[in-house]
Image 1 (cartoon, rainbow, N blue to C red):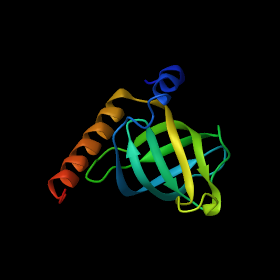
Image 2: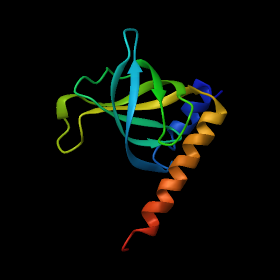
Image 3: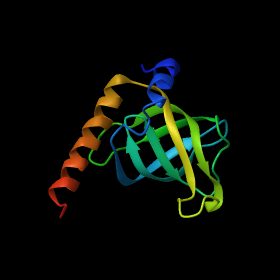
Length: 128
């Protein structure tokens, strides 16, 4: 499992991780019931969840992610590291950025595979 210390080390490079836009249903909760929403992007470091009710920074969040065409649900724990409640930061979407704190290595591998496949698809359809 990836630990919080390993996660902190990677937070310095949080934008160096490849992330892809992906509107995928996700379930998340803090200490209450699970809520369904959509994540708008994903990387090996975490996800961005679209929501009107973003949690405060440093809130610990439990995640259930089912990637398209996957059979297993990824269960992870993360921490809110970025928040934009109700669209308060201009053109940025409403929601919160969650950094993975605890996730199984095989789940990280599946996320990496998903990100790389979708990145390749985007690049192959690019006009640049």
